[in-house]
Amino acid sequence: MTNDAGILQLMDDLGNALAGVAPIAMFGGGNPAQIPDVTKIYGRELKTICEDPARLATMLGNYDTPQGNAEFITAVTEFLNRHYHLDITTANIAITPGSRTGYFMLFNILAGRTGERRRKILFPLVPEYIGYVDQGLEIGMFESRRPIIQKISEREFKYAIDFDALELGEDIAAVCISRPTNPTGNVVTDGELERLGHITRERDMLMLIDNAYGAPFPNVIVPETKLFWNDHTVLSMTLSKVGLPGSRVGIFVGPPKLMKALTSANAIVSLASPNFGQYLAKPLIQSDEVLSLSRESICPFYFERADRARKLMNKHFPSHLPWRLHRYEGSYFFWLWLEGSRLSGMQLYDWLKERGVIVVPGEYFFPGQDIHTWAHGRECLRLNFSRPDDELEKGIPVLAEAIEKAYAAG
Ligand code: PLP
Image (cartoon, rainbow, N blue to C red):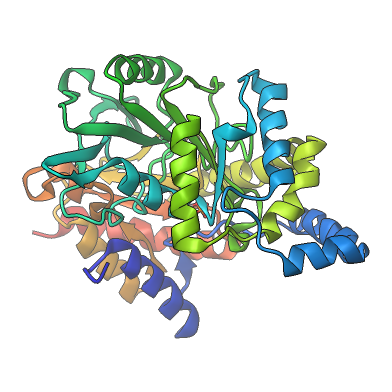
């Protein structure tokens, strides 16, 4: 935790950029956008709570149980059974202080050393979420596999799981994927997920699916997908991507025994999870309003921003150079690949930062890989496209210059 973690650079840049000279484009951080219609709905819920003295006193003055707020857990259980017929009970749920913290606890419950035995978490496909990389309490807790890279058109590509290279050794406790993936916007297909789910279950391993951007909420996902679930699956969701990132509420759905362990870890680490977001979101989950909020306010916002950014990129990016974006299938990011670039993601990051454009170098998203021996790991940038018009209009031409620079440098 005192190492030079990628996530710290990201948070530092975000903080410094905001505190110092105003940058022209913040394509770096993963902060969800503030959407006025969404804020308004939580404002309405907050007002209702404030007008009910007993409820207000309970929200402000009580610790919940380490599993989470009992009414919120019931609301989530009923919601998932109502919409997906999962046939789960409240014992299948654990609430954590944000899903990131939940993963920290889960990874360290499942993997690491017990006596002579060492177990690991496998990312079956990298690039993968920057937030997992530094979470192991022991060195070497993560392994990963390189993807198949499918070039779809002159300007697009898509990653797929390379099942031939999967090799699940005895030491793998669980596989983990984010779907849609942060940083790439990839959605592992239903077919891939079913195959992976089948293999892991047969081997008595868990499959952890980080569903931060997926269905049912915020549902910022382009392809029609099924919600995958079996008794060897852990599915996580978060209120962060439906407008409440500061309230820190992660929702985990998994086997009761593991959810109990997660609850115990939460009791040890946090005593209880913050209850504020659970109070605000519960009525929306009970009434299904969270679905209309996602459909009518959140998705249109991100899809419109993605479209606008894509059009500006097509207009400004040099047509004679081989840049490609990962096919946008969901999440709040674009992933730019400069195949054969002479400058690395890190070098481009520095060059862009000097010109007031903040991005995240791709190098951080390849945990478990030696990117010195794999050019692809040094050829990518993550871009948060959900920025206001003026930032997109000023920042994208600078990105275009960076692409020229990347191929011109010799
Ligand atoms: N998982 C993924 C894939 C994310 O992109 C993010 C946020 O960037 C998180 C988890 C963090 O969620 P939370 O705010 O619930 O910790």
